[in-house]
Amino acid sequence: MLRRDKVLMMTNPVLDFHIDKSAVRYVGSGLQRPECILAERDGSLWAADARGGVVHLQHGGEQRIVTQKISSHFEGVNSEASRYLTGTLPNGLAFARNGDILISNFGTDRLEVMARDGNSRVLADNIDGEPIGKVNFVLRDSKDRIWITVSTRIKNWMHALRPDLADGYIARYVNGKFRIVAEGFHFTNEIRMDAREEYLYVAETTGGHVSRLRVLQDGSLGEREVFGPSSLGKGAWPDGIAFDSYGNLWGTMVYSDKLFVLTPEGDLKVLLDEGDSEKVEALERAFLKNEVNEQVLFATGSGIAPWMASVTFGGADLRTLYIGSLKGARIPYFRAPVSGLPMVHWNERDIAAQ
Image (cartoon, rainbow, N blue to C red):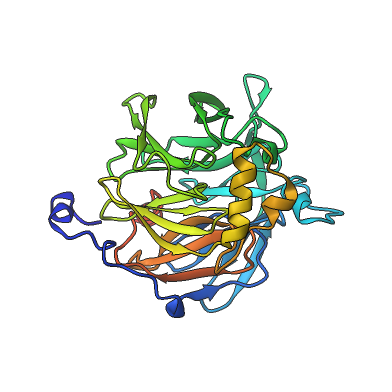
């Protein structure tokens, strides 16, 4: 990772960067809902998969699905919407310190942990005896603390796609159970920490912006503030976010299929806009009227990663950027102008081997 003082002297690499779509490549085939992607030093990827587990991908073309032994699978699915509302639905992923995979399961509404052979167990499925809600994302920090986001307490999450509902929250896994540390979010989605872990950044999907909270020494969170514009614009449904080594926050807007960057100063730059403008406009109108339904929602999704959902930096130099999606069957990637901020797992396995 670049030293902070040297980074501040550089010209921000994203300011003059433009994506050459002819240079975009793909990895994987036949994937189902590769929403979240984890990258390892050896170049391999682990992608969430709607069949109830993860797919391990190699750039040489080899791939294998590892299904969870504790989870039921999709049966009798006869509509696109059913795949997002029924059964297991691995969503956000993170590596545990020992290399196991933490899975926030958006279908079973719980946090699970899976060994790389598929053996799995449930870490938590309630908070103080009450259902957790729609567990969306999981993050582990350098102090080995586990954080999750819950998008909504509404079982049918499509009914939560409205601007006037803020029942999302963030919880931390402490002593075998979850404790809510911040709430009142508009469909809490991915979270990330900056290089010094001073702030926790939160994608609020139905809020149309990214917010952040200071991380206090005891693991509690300070007051919330919006980072960057209060609205990321028309079709602003931020989903996945990830930092690069300069301090830029990369992100996706899911239903409008946009890839964007927020600079350290909070300035917005849209790098890619793959959405169907008419269908995105129709969803925007329905969203503002609290009238989102399956028809208008599932009509959206186009481009290289339909329902663009996440960004992951990988490759030996962390300059290969992968895009996860909810409707894609493969993973697009391209060379970024700057390396990504290493995730907490990046050096741990090497250290453990010494």
